[in-house]
Image (cartoon, rainbow, N blue to C red):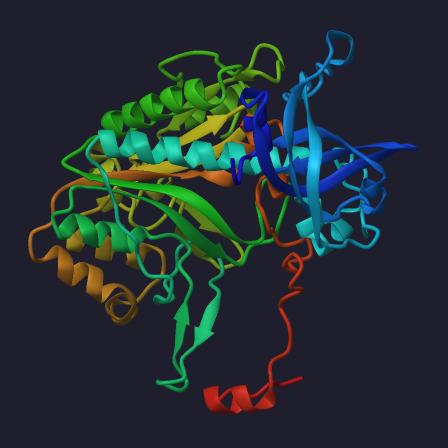
Amino acid sequence: MKNLFISQTINKIGQEVELYGWVDSKRDHKKVVFIDLRDRSGVVQTVGNEKLKQLNTEDVVYIKGIVKKRPEKLINPKIKTGSIEIEVKEFKILAKAKPLAIPINSDGYEIDEDNRLKYRYLDLRRQRMKKNLMFRHRFFKAIRDFMDKQGFIEVETPILTKATPEGARDFIVPSRLQPGNFYALPQSPQQYKQLLMVAGIEKYYQIARCFRDEDPRADRAYGEFTQLDVEKSFTTQEEIRSLIEDLLKEVIEKIFPEKKIFKFPFPIITYQEAIKKYQSDRPDIRQKKDPNTLTFCWIIDFPCFEWKETENRWDATHHPFTSPKKEDLPLLEKGEYTKVRADQYDLVLNGFEVGGGSIRITDPTLQTKIFEIMGHTKKQVKEKFGHLLEAFSYGVPPHGGIALGLDRLVQVILNEPSVREVIAFPASSGGRTAVMNAPSLVEEEQLKELGIKIVK
């Protein structure tokens, strides 16, 4: 049988199989040689004659052989295939491997991270990293299955878009066809998903790539990240929160059955209560720090605005498209901005913020006022957000949504110390990409074509 995963061989006793993989280890017993063969699914012991001596660790090989049951006393309970071995009939070396630049036979935490990222394609060979990527894959698939059942459709939104102030620095991309103008990579699909509500999509989601030029930290990757982006028309804060609770309960029970959600539905804490009791707006409310306990909670009633002392202006606490609570609109009109609460809801897990959402502003007049409070002139509002305000003039349904940071969510569920442990090719803490070592210089000709000059 061709192209089996190694883990499937346990059901093929007495059959001839063909396997491909890497030499995990070699044990030379003179006339008998044992090779542990590894692929993504696991490891299996193979046994053959002296010809196998030419194989070395991490060589890529093809093996054909007979699956045989091991004697009871020789069963290895530590691996899935420990009850069998493969009697080698044929083998081929497909690629030789030189000694590895970093060891891969441990969890890897003890190895310098810069080296792990430089040789990430080796680092990902370790079982822990492959396991993390498999969990991530299954987690994302289960999310898509759930959202599909709930009637949401996944819509991709542009990566090349317009620079708009959404709370972090943009990555900008020069335009060759329009010299002097720039695209921006999206900090989130926020405006596009609101435009999809205007378009009548009603139930949208996307597992979206987002880009922010923010300083990295243990729970935040530099440059780019992945989020579950959700938007729904004709909804309420309570309905969005309930949707996400049901999603996480179903997916976690399916993918991480050993994990226990502490309380369901998730507790709701006001911002003021959180600050007073926990001195944090992302509190860890676990009674005990059990690694298999997942304690979610919602934080609501955030201030709508915060004062930026260094910039001498008001800014939106969440983002400028978040609606103030209806009952606080009179306070907005009076200019009592510190008292205005946002119709916002953040999701916290074990002391980490893993999501945030809000009911959106759909009144163009109110939206314009919010931008002006944040320091934008009417001209700036028209230049930066005129497309959105015009769209709202053609009949916009009330809507709201949420975004979950999937990298961080997987990190916390798996109890990993850094978000980089659950991303295939993350940037380093210094902002350099794994393996590729970007950013890098470009040819002078390319800069000329783009109309760009480097000023030292």
